[in-house]
Image (cartoon, rainbow, N blue to C red; front, side, top):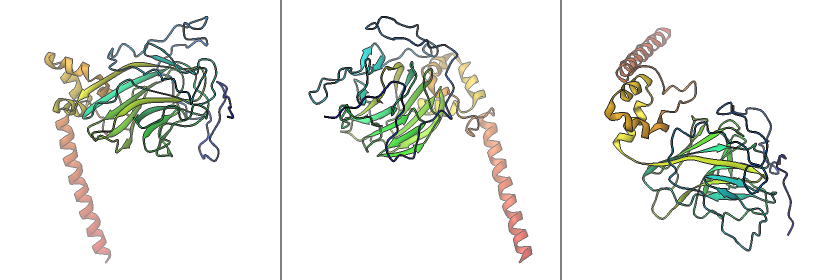
Length: 322
């Protein structure tokens, strides 16, 4: 068997791919903390101080990463190393792609949100964050460098190169990410949608049509080709699909209304529990504004009237020309 190795700071793209990895359009770190270069785990001689920014927002971790089982097909000398909620890929060197998944599947009919903090510089063929079904073979590419998540119709992934992939098709989706960023994943297992967040700002819906039917199990997943790549699961929470949940999604689009809800003692617990719904969207997101909900309805009514008047004016001008 021919085995190739990938250096931790090298970059390799798939043959024939129109997407290349460069240093343009990188996102900014979530905070200004420094990440000293060094060894991260106690199995090495030195540990480094970890940044804790953003980790106090929520302490819920409903699931953990599952230890990769040994398989004779894949006698990998450096499998992913787990330490609490942190995972280190290829601790010694890399000779293929490692894939890890959660120890529990996502519950059907619920909303799921989790976040990963990137603790090391990212490099190599690809590092992808996403989801996959129980049919994904975690060890299929242990001796090849591949963009595993989204390579077929059983998984969906967001690459550190800023691309999203499903069923073998890449598309431009968001900015590139590396050390110091927080990647959020929101999966609606009632409607079957997938959405990513970068530094707690939504990137918009990535995919719809996620299987929600009985008999299909969906797991959070990460795939990585480079060595000494470290990530930490800083929260993972699930919520029932309810009227309260959907009301909060609407309320969070209107900052003034959200402030009023926060001021009501009986609703403070709900606001705190659904904290991730309060993330800001893109700067030009038309769904977020400072108007009250009632004011917005009035403005929408005026806009419709103006649009109607403009259309009648255009029709009059057109008839006059005729």
